Image (tube, rainbow, N blue to C red):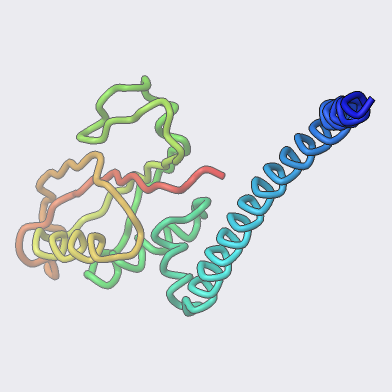
Length: 194
């Protein structure tokens, strides 16, 4: 009888351990693993929020004039009238007047086969930007044309020359001096699709 009582207690202890204590202990272990996983996610979220705050601070530190320049360089749309006025302003600065035959081809990339070279610009099918081609003609001498191209190059607007043709223009009237040419220029400008 002395041995039976301790064996019964050991059997009850083992049974209690296997049926109650061990399952609860395994459940607690799983809960601790879940807690660690959630803590890691909270830490990552805090890190992301810190980065977001830093970027937001950097964005708010940009002056409004710089934002205007950035929006002009990488616009999210093209204002046709503003584009023509900008080009006309650059032309007038370089003594180029009487622009004519102004043509605007919107979504010029769709008017050409995808994947085909247009000038030196390759239009891809999966781009996240669109473009517009502005064509116009004017009469000027070559020096003023060079200055015009230089100013166009230095402007904030991103443009590519797609087509250029010129022909000698007869001197008209007594005030014409030097060789004048009829220039026909096509430029492409871009904007980011939303």
